[in-house]
Length: 456
Image (cartoon, rainbow, N blue to C red; front, side):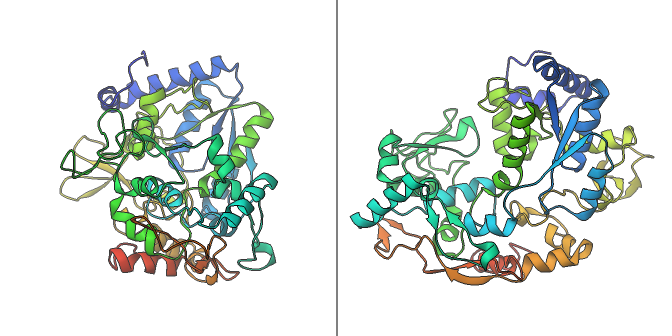
């Protein structure tokens, strides 16, 4: 089947195919990837149900394929044991602990898109020329350490060049490309401009058309009131109070440090090309990635194969039931639920009127992740964590302390035009006793309601 056409309609057509046909297409994509790289491929294996299905599909056509697992320490203990039950799986570890990642970059809140928008929108350009020259010097020397946020083991080196571009860096690249949501959502954010920082959250497009924006296939932010009368799907205005008023660092970079960097280092060292178990239905970013590249992104800057892109969560569960595949015990049993809410053993009843569900965790991944947590139905991931691994729950929710904000700028005005600078003297950070996420969730709940983050 040709992958020449990649658009939303084509994706919907593929997603509607029966499981048997999807298996055929997926294995064709796997064989194509394997042939292109002469067998030098590796499965990114998390121990979750999606990557378990992926590993089975890959090894059905390429039995000797290696897998790699990033042991972040953020998984359920059962996931780690489950991964170790497989043959030919290499294990890598990140260089930073999760508390260090939070202290350096910020807590993962709301979603990667929102956290990324907040991370860049909060940058301050100092009004003091001496401060700017000092930052430029620091960017040339690679940054410096600024204080110990939670003891000697938690001290962090702050890289000013990365976190705050100097004037020299701005001259070299006045515009930083910020992709939130894939190619159709790409936009250029001029980090030194208050107006353009504000556009990240309000839904305007800096640069050409800055006053009225654009929307549609071009994938830029629109002005919701002046041109179209409605907000762009990428509009982040709801989270302006979170970006402006909450004294905690917020970032999208935890996955980069905890998973992507050790995986990339492993792949480069062993000269292996990765196969991932991501699906387009999981997020707008992944949908746009498929529209840009299809399943096999040969032309991408970092080529990856994502042969399950057009699968759905129901396909994953159906595959597990149909082929009697073992998954990690934290998922519980897979059951079929009809429209009336009646529950049946999945092995006895798989009909179109029924939906398959896990009686335990629906998803595993990083147990401390705050992305999408507010959308959890029934028991949330933190409520389940309290039941399954109470010590990890206590570490995540408890602890925390107030510390000096390493990015505080005494020379910066409260307002930068219409934009209110985020410039707290003290911020909430992890401590030796825990990550302090309970306090962070309470701060968010004060803005969006007491049941926005349900963690108790």
